[in-house]
Image (cartoon, rainbow, N blue to C red; front, side, top):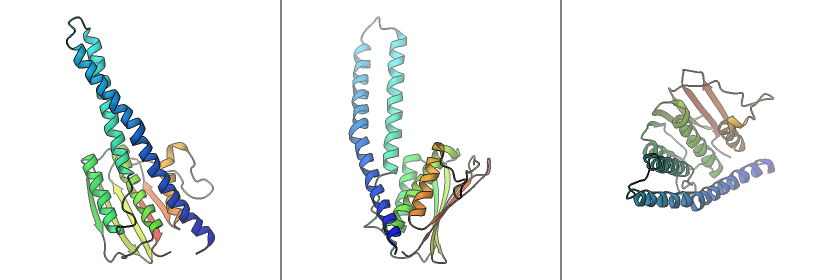
Length: 227
């Protein structure tokens, strides 16, 4: 393996560590502050409910703010759950993929069909596992946020020395930007696709996006089975 490949794989591992630090910082900081604010507002609403001359508009406003904080906390907790660190070292790729699908269903109440064709390799490099699993999480998150449907399909198989992961839905679809070549997107609104593209590239893989408005979306990533 070349020094460049080694550096890319180390970068992927370091990026994963940084991601977990950010997740922890958000949980221990903003999330706790929001919980504290929610508790104070709930207490205030209870105290003010005994005030006979309290305007109805004030009570309604407090209730709306409480509702907004509750929704924000649910969204943040769901997002943090998506990016928790799977047991990359301890577990095999198939087990991690299945755990991610189960977690997505529990957080979103959506349904994901999972198909993993045998034989899958018993050992997959740590960088490849990180890349595939993070791309899967981002793809399923995009289904929830953008596709407008509650169902998705995930397939994992091997072909000609490569691991192939595919995530598809029958949602709204969109016009994908170019991901490779001189016209490859660097636009801020495409940060999710760019992140998936870069994760695949760091392990010598490629990302493909097939979609059109009204026809759903298919994300496919191919990575080498062996380093």
